[in-house]
Image 1 (cartoon, rainbow, N blue to C red):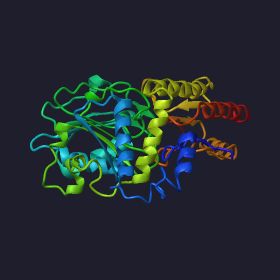
Image 2 (cartoon, helix red, strand yellow; image 1 turned 120 degrees about the vertical axis):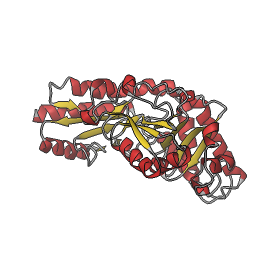
Image 3 (cartoon, rainbow, N blue to C red; image 1 turned 90 degrees about the vertical axis):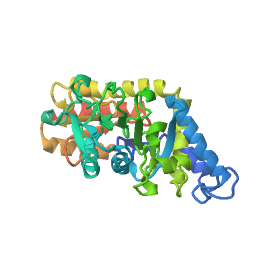
Image 4 (cartoon, rainbow, N blue to C red; image 1 turned 135 degrees about the vertical axis):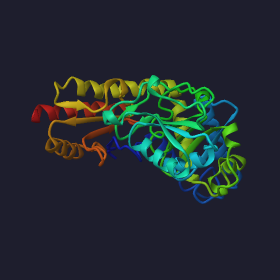
Length: 361
């Protein structure tokens, strides 16, 4: 079997070791006589899977005791609505940092639910950078401040996070969770769709501080209250059981690689190869994001001709590469180098880029 060089933005590459272990356990899990997908989510075996995945998340991110780890459904897109539904308080607006496509979608949903203000925006720079921390104006009475830690489409990433004092900091970390160490205690709520760094699509991780769980108003449906899921250990309704199981395997894999700090260094080594290839191409390739806002997860770049970009994608696919076409909204090229993308794939991409430039430069 020849594995593709997988640079897809999501669903994205999974560790080969994880896929092989899942394959071995696919038909029968732990002597149960059935697949994990067939067993009751109320069974002791699945509760063990659920609890172990939570415990590993706590361990790898050093999550304090006064936070809950929830496994929910609906993706980050559902969180765009659940967060304001649960956290906006009367007379206290929700503040948002506008940094691109995904932040924009979160803002659009929040405006449907309550008063929303923009604490900072880089729209005037075509979202090619993240705002400096000094640019973020947090209203003292804000219900929370929301930011997107990594913009998958634009290829920008926060290098550091603001100190918001008594205002809870909420972060969409869908595309960079567990790719680098973070101080969870700086945040009130962190959420992430699994399909980039944590596992397959279908499950969303929410890490939420206890006092914010208690904000859940009784006026919204039970299924949309964080309190409901916290009280039921993420088992209020039937969970995406296979996806939770896969997240557990990925977390074990991260631990086996030395944890988040080692993964962070590995990611830096990978992305440096590609950014160096762009910067040293004499202008043939051009990075999209401003250098101090460049993402370690999504590398966006252009060639001077759209025809050449189309040819780049076509030839790369013929050479076994997948996912190098930029997002349909912005065009260009993009290599997503999430945790499970091997260094060897990045080296192969750099070699392809050099060869392509030699032939078409």
